[in-house]
Length: 363
Ligand SMILES: O=C(O)CCC(=O)C(=O)O
Ligand SMILES: [Fe+2]
Image (cartoon, rainbow, N blue to C red):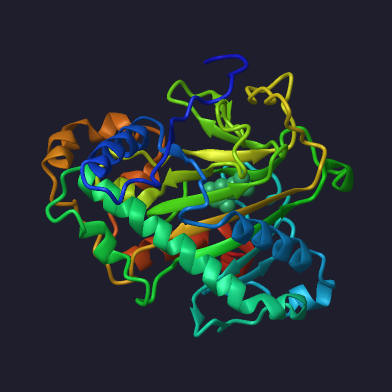
């Protein structure tokens, strides 16, 4: 095991020109290679798929939301449909290791109908409902573009196999999530081993992550079992108008491809620890501020069966499955549909909400 891992060397790709034939084959190959090797890839934010102003506005809405009066947030408390507000320590992403739930607040937005939320939302953000609906759609469209590139890069027949399973109007587990991690100064009871978000892999097919310049904390588990920091602005993107969008593979794309695409474990920490195997802090980033992030978890339609995708490359890979996913049981276990998989994962992370329904067990 490495002592202090350096920053992760995740590839950076530009998909803005990939509508053009020929170019899309090249970009698709880069994307598949990055997803197979790292499970993570930076997609340069050129403003082409999601306008800079949209991302900026989403962060502004997020700040307004988390600053809302507590009663207003509590009125929107997260339900078993995975929508709504989760307060500090409500979610425990790594229940086997954590002594206390994640040091974060979250707000999950499910589907909107005609630009209106169909779940309770705090009053403070009601004026932005339509903007949120548009932002969520833009995220879903970008995911579908990536899913098409995965289909092309893997030689899936037809290449639209994944895209077709993510039709925007079908009921699905897709969630737009705002996250707020309070500054360490506001959580004096945190202990050295505590984390802002426990180690986990994502539950859906593909995830988009938006972060703000200077706000450290995300780490990925490397192939050698060390933690590597994931810089917000990797070398070469420092002068871009907006940090790249970080894309990662979730468990479902890993199932679908027999583990060829990696669903990599990641976490959010408070501080690099001298004693543990935490990653080193990236230059220009800090842990002392509050941290905001925005995540889009893209899921296929609820009734989608999770069977191996028709691709020769995936079939060839099958024999290497066990080695590739060692340490991630979720990427190996077969379940029937996308929704069944999601329900299993939610049960494990929202201990209180589901605690009382554990069959035959005391809460
Ligand atoms: O806040 C972040 O940077 C990552 C959050 C995350 O991994 C998640 O919510 O699944
Ligand atoms: Fe995650």
